[in-house]
Structures are given as structure tokens and as C-alpha cells.
Length: 192
Image (tube, rainbow, N blue to C red; front, side, top):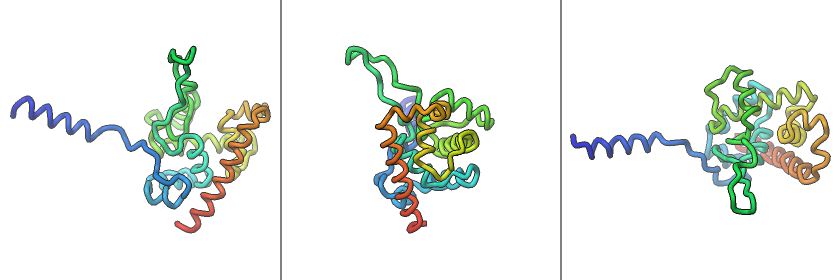
């Protein structure tokens, strides 16, 4: 077999093993459409609900807000003088937009060194772990999407210190997360 043919076969094989499908589902406003298009998302969230007690609609609403279900989502770049790239706004990455330090804490605590933020099963498990700790440390109900989101966004220490109270825009975002969780919950009762 010639080198060119072997190289072409190897290239085709490597291309087929490429990254995952990181695009968002087509209809983010309909939980049933998300479940139909990406059943693995629903299975991952159900597993998280069984393990950590966080309801599927809460997970869906927070993932929607954080990454719009894009597996390799990142924060935007910062620019000096409007043109000089200065890196990303934060280390947030993946479905859950987990920061590097918090992700490492989760992987150490749960002994999941191979967990990846761009894998839906790992991202939802991380979210369940984080929100279960927010319930334990701050008394936030696992079904309270709005308050869980505030603690998720600000970090538990920031939330406990009331950092969200100085951010009216964040209070509005959290209210939208709560509304979306209720909408997703209503929709999921019709499509399960």
C-alpha cells in the first residue's frame, strides 16, 4: 500500500475520532425538543437527580443560562485598548462553566480525575455536587433554581456575603433561570 493511501486512511480515521458534538440543541426553549434531540443529556441529568437530588429542570435551566448547552463554551476574550488580546475573562469552560479551581476541587473530592467539563455526564455530576454542597452549607433547597443559581454564579462565599445584592442585573438573570426551570418542569411532564 502506498504511503499516500496509508496517510489518507490514517487522516480519515483521526478525523472520525475528533471532538464531540459541542453545538447547542436546535430548540432551547422546549425541554421536550432538547430531550428528543439529545437523549444522552436527559439520561445524564436523571443520573444526577438520582445521585444528588437536584431536579432535572433546575439542571437544564442553569446549563441553559451558563452555556446554552454548548459543550465547549468559554467566556469571551478581554482586550486592552480594544485590540490587544489579554486572555479570557475567566477560566470557566464547558456545559457547566465551571472554573478551573472549583473543577479541580470537585475532581479531587469525588476521585474523578478523568472527568471533563465538556462531557455532559461529568458536567451535570459536578453541578449536582456543587448544589448539594450549597444546600448543606447555605440551606438552599435543591429545587430553588433561582437561589441555587445565585450561589452557583457568585460562589458560596460570595453568596453568603451577599455579593449578589449589589448586582441588580444578576438578580434579574436568576429570576429568568427560576422561570425557565418552571417552564422546563411543566414541559417535561408532557413529554416523559
